[in-house]
Length: 342
Image (cartoon, rainbow, N blue to C red; front, side, top):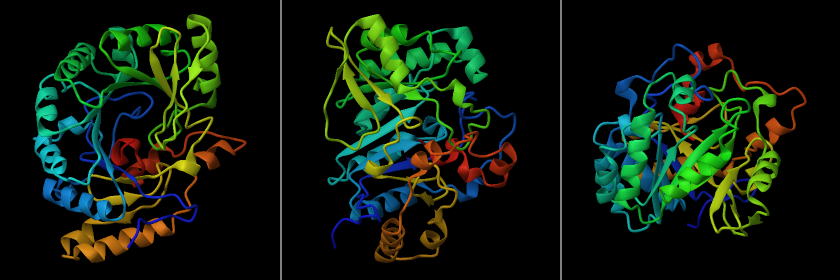
């Protein structure tokens, strides 16, 4: 049976696999509230269960897996899962996104286990601003983690992600690009998104792709688009000195029509869109003993019905505010960005 396509003929190629909903930061654009409802630890899937699900997605056409959270490095012995997945010959790419706080002590182990690509979130180079933005005093640990990752030499490269927020860190664009170059990483600017968890999102706080390019052109001169045929979320550009960077413009220029990503939470809930309000429970049938073929049939049927265009639909709204209130998220924590992964 061939790869599964959804109603818009989008294949299933990428899997975002969350290994935990816990996080050791409280970033303003993702976790601004004081209290959260966490998944029951008994519901969190074991490494063996996660690997089994990855194989089921692989049978449907997935060739790329990204481990996410929450903060994935708070999951004990994560390198064990990396090593398990890295053995899959059909898996073309195995990546991880982290906030970097625990990376210094784990970077080499993750590389040795077979992790190919690493993305570290870095929203500011100012320690005081980091403390305000995250409510944690871990800026030095993040920079140490990035240095450790650069030394570990991930074969498919190191990326840094910056969520740009007006009046918060949009005055650091040039500094962040220079820092990324100094550690051999490619920087990606991300528009502030109104996803689950962004309970204080405002349209006026978004620095758009168009504005980013104007500002960077003023700083560096003409910028060349890099033409690529890819479903990757970032549009890439080249500066005159040869440096490259990306922009993920999900808020103002959605790429829903090319989206081939599925998301699975740490407790095994399958979402077909970052903005989806409902998911498919895989934990119950998995623990009930459904066969590999039966689980694959569930996944195939769900993807084949997929109609999601969440970011496009958000863009079309006249009155656009937060996706969900804090109370709505407490009632259904799987709608949180830190639960379903980015």
